[in-house]
Amino acid sequence: MAVAWLVAACALLQSSATGKHADIFGEEEAVKRAVKDADAAGERFREIFGVAPVKVAVILQKDGKPLPDTKADQACYKNGAKFIFRWEKKPGYDEMTHELGHLWLLVWIDGLPKAPPREPRYGSTLPDWADEGVATLFDDEAMRARYRVDMRKYLSGKVPSLDELFDSVHPESRQPGAEERRAKDRWLFYCQTNSVMEYVLEKHGAESLRHVIATLKKGKGMAPALGAKGLPKTVEELEKAWREWASAEQ
Image (cartoon, rainbow, N blue to C red; front, top):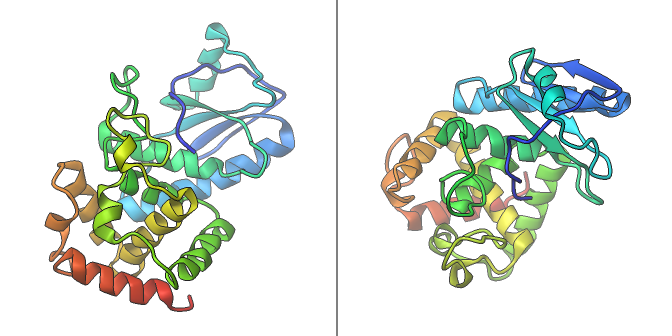
C-alpha cells in the first residue's frame, strides 16, 4: 500500500465532483462514492490532528488511464487542490482513503513536496510503523474491524514486542540497510500498527496521539513520548496496557 510519488498529472474524465477535502475525477458512479469517502476521511483527519488536511485532486484511473496531460492538469487545481493523486482500484484492495491518509500525513509532517525524496521512502519521515499506523486509521470501518479481530487472534500466539515493532521498517521498505529490520509478517504489521494507534486514540485521546506523532517527528523515538498526556510511563507499561486492551472484545 505504499504511496507512489504524488505529483502526477490529471485529465478531465467523464465526471467530476468538488468535495470539501478532495476533488474527484473519473467515472460518474465511482466519483460519487469517492468524494463521499474522501470527505469523511478528511473530517476524521481534522478530528484527530486538529486541522483540516490539505486539499487534493484525485484521478480515478482504470487500466492505467488517463495518461498524464500537462495542459489538462491545470483544470484539476481550479477548486483549491494543492496536489494530484492518481488512484486505481486493485483486485481485493479498495482503500483509497488509506492512501489519502498517507498523503495527508506526509504533508502535515513534511510539508508539500517539491521534488521526490533523494532516498526511497515508504511514506513520510516518521518511522514506518507510525506512518502505517496512522494511515490505517483512515481505512473504512469494515477494514478496521478486520484489524481488531485479527490482532486479537495474533495475540493468542507470539507477536513482536512493541520494542521490536518500533525498531522495524515496512515489509516492503527499500531504504538502504532495511533488509535486517523489515517486518516479517505483512498483515501482522498492519494489524499491530493499527492496534497501537487505535489504543492511543481510544484510551488517551487525539491530543495524546498528536503528542506521540510530534515526538516521533523530532526523531526521538517512542519512549520519550511516554509519561505525558496520560500515556503509560514506559514502553513496557504501554505494551502491558495495549495487550490487555487489544485482547478484549471491542
